[in-house]
Amino acid sequence: MTEERRMIKEAARQFTMAEVLPVANRLDPERGEIPMDLRDKMSEMGYFGILIPEEDGGLGLGCFEYCLVAEELARGWMSVASLIARGNGLLSMDTAMTPEQRKRILPKMAAGECLGAFSLSEPDTGSDVSSLSCRAEKDGDDWLLTGNKYWCTFADGADFILVMARTDQTVPDNKRHQGISAFMVEKPRGELPENVSGATIPKIGYHGWKTWELAFDGCRVPAANMIGEEGKAFYMLSHGLEKARAHTAARSIGLAQGALEDATAYAQERRQFGKAIGEFQAIRFKLATMATEIEAARQLLYYVCSEIDGHRRCDKEAAMVKLFASEMSERVCSEALQVFGGAGYTTLNAVERYWRDARLTKIFEGTSEIQLRIISDHLLGRQRDTKG
Image 1 (cartoon, rainbow, N blue to C red):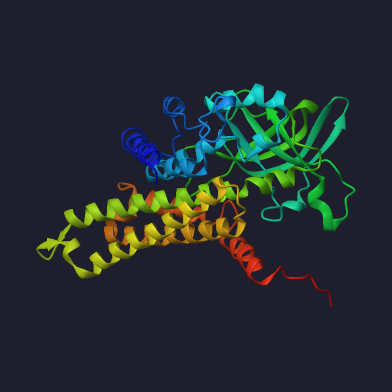
Image 2: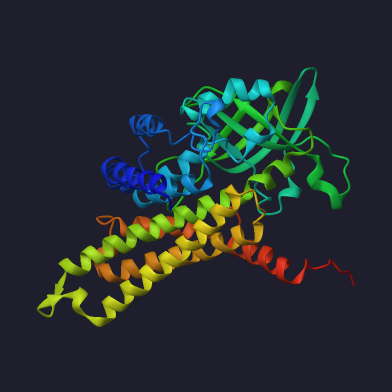
């Protein structure tokens, strides 16, 4: 934690408490959407260009700074902490862009003028990315996308959707990951692309924006909008997983920190049996345990961020921090809700929002079970498929 990083963290904290938290407290209970004026303020802070190089219009900072900001934003509203990922090169797509694509897109992403949604999952495909069935077929100088997609958050509000589709139907089953390509489907903000229909998915949390099921029916994409090499999108995704999982860990920590702070304040205000409940050992020890678990996750995150910024491979450690922080976050937020008692089980206090959103962190960016598999594979080697 350098002095510069402390300043970045404190600025993000002040921004969250002044701008994000009041909006979240007002809009999340009614499932309202993140206001455009808040997005504009985030743009002014440079939050959509933290990871984008200075020569491309960004701040040129690292994963450490990115996660410091994400943690603080999540303390207010996890959806806002997630929104910054819709800039910042969106899942390392910037590393696969051509010079022409970088010049045209990245400065707009850094300024928050061109934000993206990500469309990977399908109704029958989640963690098994190689099983994608949405296909892309060449048609002159264009590609036509056809198939169904699921769990595409921000599909309507984004300026483009980064779609993963299969361009090679002939690869053998054991190399299916090699036939997937990435396409940047540009569209008007507030609408779905032409020849794409969709329906919103009802969610118990992660409010502030809509999550969509999409049906592509011959959606036309210029060949110039393919990101990276044809059939190599799986490797682009893999390249960005460490940052994505660190980002999820940061969001998890931010949720838990918000829950801890709210529970601590409530324990000093709420009185039972003639004194504040914070004077009872059961509550004091509960808060102490919560604080310890949060700090343990935070320090592991700092280590992982340092490894990423040092360009050292840390897929095992990234899986560890994503696993540990997300599991911790749900546990801590649940304990915070317990401190609130019945008041915690209402939408009058933010702790129930932290609790609902923390539950999601154990699912997206790879479930806890997927993280356990990654870690165990590093320890024991990959399991070999056997028949009979």
